[in-house]
Length: 417
Image: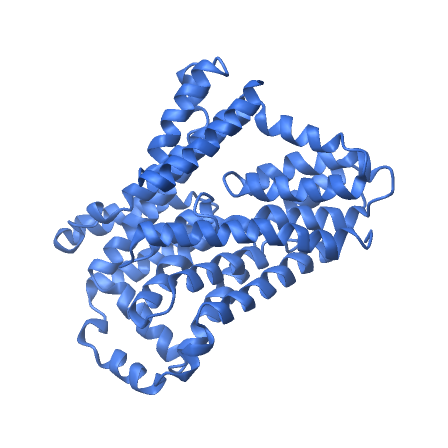
């Protein structure tokens, strides 16, 4: 049995044990990374830790730390009430407002995780207060971010269009953008209907709005004003100066803690440490898979298939499955070159294939193992995290199972491009 196949089987075992024994999957994944890395891949500790997502660790800790302070001093309550007033008490519109905001942020150049890191804590605080499904709100935020993620001036769009140009493939920037926007808009609409969005329109919005506006803790005070300024500073730092969201969040949180230690003292304890362990452990194991060539091995096996349409479908699924645990951009950067040989034959339309790969590799970021899904999981207040994690995992699994086939059928089979 090859080392690559062994590593895949071990990953399956990790999922089974974590599901049946209620053990933190991240801890299991760290142990698996050590065992597989040392015994099957001949990696030393440095090789194993090369896959540790240090940047994501800092983002998860920093963002949850900053918004824990915001919750403690009442700033998120104030933002929730402001949102109520903005939509004139129509709570059913709030998930769509969050979809549009994150989509606009990524469309103008924000990295998708940065946009989600900014919007998700506010959106999920609102969901917790008004009984909106956290899965609904989290999915709307992530799909909004991905919907705007392939505009011609966006990070994802620029990267994919650059790869297409480098590989001398025919491309269409507008088609790429619209494919992602329409796909995520359709999915968001389905999620809104299935997870209680329509029921939100039947509630007494005016009464809830009045009640929220009259609460004493919604009034601004110096701590809330400073926290709001910190949140604005986070947006400016990330979008305006391309600074790291995690490091910026931690810095701002420390400044707030220095001035208001009483309201900030418990914030460190509210950082989502089990989520941090889970995500970092799984991604470290995925890093071992990349280091030992398992992902490349799987991709090359698919590209050797002699039926172009079937190979295209399998590449879409590989992109979706791997991206649910790893970097979407990295996966697209690997898969598009793998598709070049059969795209060059002219049997598959390049524009449609590239759009299908892009959508497949990013729409699955609702998975709790992806950066966006992890941020949603970490940002949700007052939820059973084990249950919410399972909900995100099931929903992510459904997206992985359905969307690649759908975009393949719509974009690849007709031969666009």
